[in-house]
Image (cartoon, chains in turn blue, brown):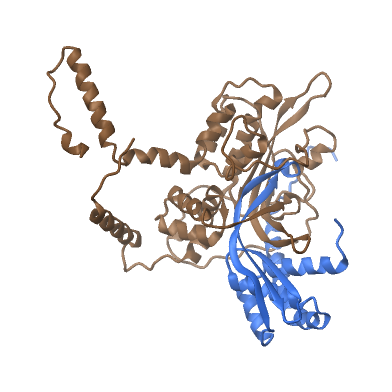
Length: 151
Length: 368
């Protein structure tokens, strides 16, 4: 399925929110000012999702095991709906993620939230990932071939 | 058989209170926090998540604390908890090829795209106890290297290009993967259901069976094509949106075994394969799973089933440690009536054997 540019951006945003640390998300959210008027359409509620893998890595799917997941759907006063589906059991994180998802569908709000919330989350994630990658890279094995008198 | 017995409530209450007391231990020692367990006993947490079949680090840490570090008891607690959760469905299959790698090694190829990344491994340690760890001295951070190691495709995908190895095993897209948490177990099983059972199976049991295949009970001569550990994205479909969204990442360990050949008159010989995928950092478990997966594929390759590790019903029926511990430990429950019946039987047998004279019911009290 090919998604529109907007759908892709929304997907990426929801992923960023889901991977963020709940503490940082709440902190940034509070700094953004008062919450908009909204109603909870669903949840936030915690349940389980069965994670799938593929046999051989790329073959037919199989059920690997479950994970806790929390979902929420919120409706803004103008009828815009936001969704969240985040691993773990943090209800507040899911609720905020759904609110952010709803707000970001408005261009002006998106700009405000991009600067105040999404960018800092993106930077934090990139920093964290870079450290992980670099630490792993330092354990890369450099094999050398023992010289046998030939070039 | 055991029967309901009355009484003992007070003793049970007091026993549980005593358990709580012993769990806490010496009150002058600070209590463990879940963060400490999650951070510093991370591999115990991984095992509990894997065999408890529920990915949630904090819950696993709580279970370890509650079980006083008895991991099978902790796994039991997690399995019990997961039954209380409403089910939201299935994720899309995770893609281990795009994993954020923490470790990646191959015993087949020295030089491979993306390189060999040792990561945080016990390999090459001398297994000497470190007295410094008895204290709380400062610990250096990991060294940083150049992270631009390039793409690291799965080794089996590299081999597959020349058809030297069998492919990953496609199935009918209409086929729904079996789910043994929803449907009763039936034999023979499809490989997908078997992999689910192995993924939550007991590490010790699978390790022993995997070891048995190496020692000659269903010899299949494996090489580690690749082991990779790292985080994969979990994507979940949101029906209202009509597309899937990333819901976060989980850490998994994947093991690709490459085994000796299978061919036929029409197909030239190819390497065969075993596959392991487990939650968390659990290399021994993933390897054991892959050894057992390969052994259990005997039927697919027309191999004779001669060893325990190849016997699907034997392996799958006994690999679940919660089921196993339930049945073994139930022997502790009152079997007074059963045992009375057996006592009675053996007395009668002995009487008809012309042995000791029959004594009457000196065990009567126990039956009540």
